[in-house]
Structures are given as structure tokens and as C-alpha cells.
Length: 401
Image (cartoon, helix red, strand yellow):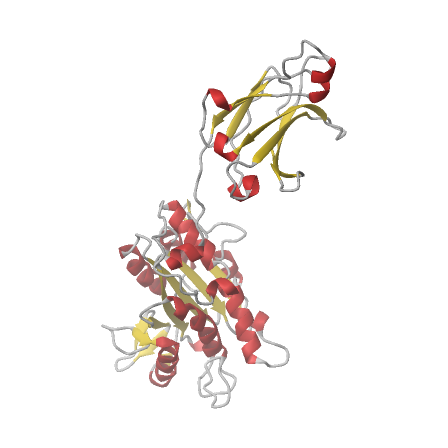
């Protein structure tokens, strides 16, 4: 919405005003609730305010004919702003856009009572009004958008020999290692949104049998034509099987797996699919330049990347990829949106050793950014959710958020 005013009453000795507007929603009990303040325009009786946005719910709570009151003030440095006048409108009136009816007389009741010749204290004119639908993550899921979940696990030698209890990949008969816990925690929630329950799962940084070739994106299933595992249990099984057959090696290259998933995401950009890549790693990224390039390229695709850091290493590079503070860039190009969420697993280990609690906390934080990341992709492409397929209850991702 954008407004301008004409011939407002002067409020200081120099024939100027510093006007601003305050919008109020009327309540059922006759009181008013403030819902927006415009900026102050200095030294003018004919201000033009910047366009601004008010949620429809805040303005009228769904009742299009509810009174909206607007007060016009002259700003004072000491906070004792002078009242110039007021007018009323409604969402329905405003939604008609710029026309002769959306020119409002600003009236000051005190002046009206005192001065016989008083007409008004100026006019406010609506310049433009646009209604935009704000969709939610739930709207897209209800409309049939599927989350495609892919897993990538770090098989570099720095994790330690899987047969040793000190290894991050240690296969204990009694408890899950950090990799398995992170995988299960995140995967079990995301799998509810993935109708086929088939999860591509990859390893990186290992030498593969029979010829000891190093791979940075090998299918845990052992089948190059079909990297899918059935359910999270299937992923865990393939992970343990791979630990028995490959040789942990290095370096820690992230870009190959990111690019592999990005290629899949690039094929389906109509909003029907959204890809989530979970990478679990113990340390320092060796191909940071290529990884940043891969992330910047992937930022324009329906893809989010979750990185869970396990073990005691320093994770500075991960913080850099998690573009919360500074947006990731590569060769002078900024990522068009933030798609990486990094969390160190050690922050979630429950002091009492309760694995269920650790996993619940991890899942909650790791999944917190996915809905907004999905929405930012859809909004950027002008994609709207399809009509709801059914009114069945949704699985648990949005409850975690």
C-alpha cells in the first residue's frame, strides 16, 4: 500500500510539518489496536510515504468491512507528537485501489467544533494497493509437494578405524554411533513427507573394492544404477554394510555429492518436489572453493543442505557455508538464498546419556530452517501451492518447527 497527503495543517512556526500515519484496527468492544506506523516525512505538508505492507489479519482479522482508523500526526523530537487529524476506511475500500473514493479528508474533531469555516486538515490519497497471498509450508505439503531426502556420509580416515571403540564409525552392538543417531533423528521425521520412502544414500572419501579407487559419491547400496535404500532402516543397513567393505580414506570433498543432488533437483523445478540433502561429516572440508561454487549454484534450485558435524573437530568452514551471518559467495556471485543449515552434533548430546532426547533436539534444530527455505524457493519462482489433496493430518515436521 502507498499513500500521499495534500495540504496538511501546519504545526510549527515555519509553516512546515513532519507528518506520519498510524493505522488502527477496530475491535469488537469499540477499542482500537495499532497495526502499523509509517515513517516520518520531514518538512512538508504534502508527503508521499514509501510503500508498506500490513498483514490482512492485522488490519481487519478477516472482516473486510471492519473499520480501519488512521491518525495523522506531526512528529516532535520530544515524543509529544501533535495530532493533525484522522480518517476511517476499511480493507474493502482500500482494496479498490487508486480511485476518487480513496481520497480521504483528514478531520480534527476539536477544530471542527471550534471553527465554523473548518473544512478539513488536508487530504490523504491512496496511490496503490496490492494484495499478495502468503503461503505456508503446510499449504505446499497439502498440495502434494514431496520432500526428496538424500543422505551423504563421510568415510574419511580421520573418523578412525570402525572396528575401534574410539572411532566415530564404531559399530557397537549396544548403542548407535553419532552418524547413525544423526541419520535416524533427521531421517525419521523427513521420511513422513517422502511418499515412496526411497532414499538415495552416498558415501564420500573412501577407497572402493575391488581396485581401491577413491570415490566422493559412491552409493551405499553398492549399486551404481540404483542408489536408493528403502526407508531409514534401509539407509542404516547400507551404511553399516559399506563400513565393512570400503577403506576409509580422503580427502573430505563435499562438492561431488552436492552437485549430484543438485543435478536431480535441476530436473524438477515446478514446485512438485523439494530436495533435502543431509551430509554427516567429522571435519574440515578439503574442497572449500568447489563446495562454495556448488552451494551458490544449488541456491537457485529446490534444494536445502543440512550438515551435521560429528566429533570434536573445529567446524569454522561449516559456519561459513551456513549463510546465516554472511551469504555464501563464489567468484563474486552471492547465493540467491540461504540453503545450508549446519549444526555440531556435540551441542545436542544429552548430559545424562539419553539418546532419544539428543536425537529429538537435533531433529528440531536441523529441520527448523527447511520450511522457510522451501518457501523462499517457491516465492522466488512465483510458484503457488496446488489445491489440497486431502485434509488428512500432516506428519510431524511443522510440529517440530
